[in-house]
Image 1 (tube, rainbow, N blue to C red):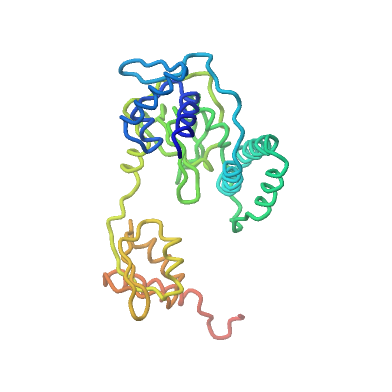
Image 2: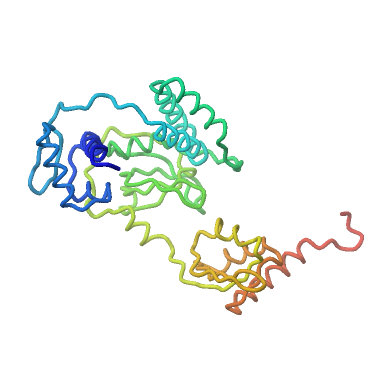
Amino acid sequence: MNRVDRLLAQILLLQSRRVITAGEMARHFGLSVRTVYRDLAALGEAGVPIVAEAGVGYALRRGYLLPPVNFTPGEAHALAVGGLLVERFTDASVATQMRSAVAKVRAVLPRGEQDRLSRLERALATTASPPRPPQASLDLIQRALSGRQVLQFFYQGAGRDGPEPRTVEPQGLIHYLERWHLIAWCRTRGAYRDFRTDRMSEVRVARENFAPRADFDLAGFMRETMPAPTLQARIRFAPLAADRVKREWWQGIMNEQPGENGIVFTLAAVEWDRLVGWLLSFGTAATVLSPARLRKLLADAGAAAASHHKIAPGQPC
């Protein structure tokens, strides 16, 4: 990015935030703080009304706006790819908004770029995914997050007889294990809780705002609450299975070494049972080298599966 483009991007960033620190701008653009200071000084000299408040940050003077900026072909293409991923990983409430946004982008593109965007959209696809269970509106949850508004809903906890009412202060929305999870301060329980959105029902945004919680950090919460993969196993996979290992084993690949009969991976795991179930799907394309306990668990699970599916004499196929 040349300096002119960078200065324009910095104005757009300032325009999109009420206030931002030089350190945050430096991290956003991958610059040093000193470079950010120089850029802000240059913008000020060029007449951009930047207001600085000691200990708070920088902001554009109220009322200053750049004229509408047209999208570049690359930006429009990136939004098309993003729209495909939104369709794949979210729900109708967000996908509808994304389709509307892409349509607006298309409308301001020159005719030739509109045709290119259409060709790109026809050339993009994702693999089919299993039907997702009904879940709370992600758009509604996003609006509560951005507006710091209290959410009320009924939640069906695992092993509970029925749904229970909850009143929460939403803090974050994360996607893992093929589900969206709302991280929130639960007023009902008096603690931070992880709510699966497919277990939430009758969700509504209350007419109440809450103050931000200074002690909460989403990344830190995830590090503390997600089970750490403390177990390790060395497993040899057939060459054709190696790519699948890299795509599917999300708990961590610690090491990879090519060998004569395949590729040896050192895999991190939270628990053996999940790893055993996954390894069974490889059949003879996976060989456990260590530890011996995992090898025994896998052999026992395979024998149990074979016994379960074995057809007794005289039994119809």
